[in-house]
Length: 112
Image (tube, rainbow, N blue to C red; front, top):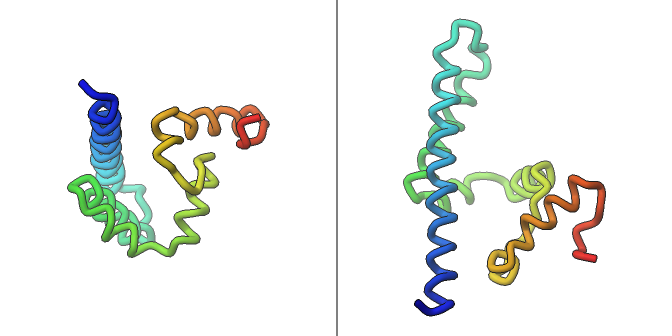
């Protein structure tokens, strides 16, 4: 197999894992809705979260992504310790994972 095919396959595997993770997390949140102690004031918000996660898991992430203010998405990435951008080189070398490890250890993300 060519290197390009392997990289493409790795990218598709990553997308598939993320879709499965979103679907799983949606099920967890949905289970919480069944708890008597789940606040009524948060129910609609949680239902919207479940809907967004499931739409993204089905492959509609582009539409879901554009429904959310980009500043909120940037903030979420910062909180997660993830870079704001993802280049092909970062993906192929695993740099985004290394940066997160460095940030959690109190280092910088410049790679030095």
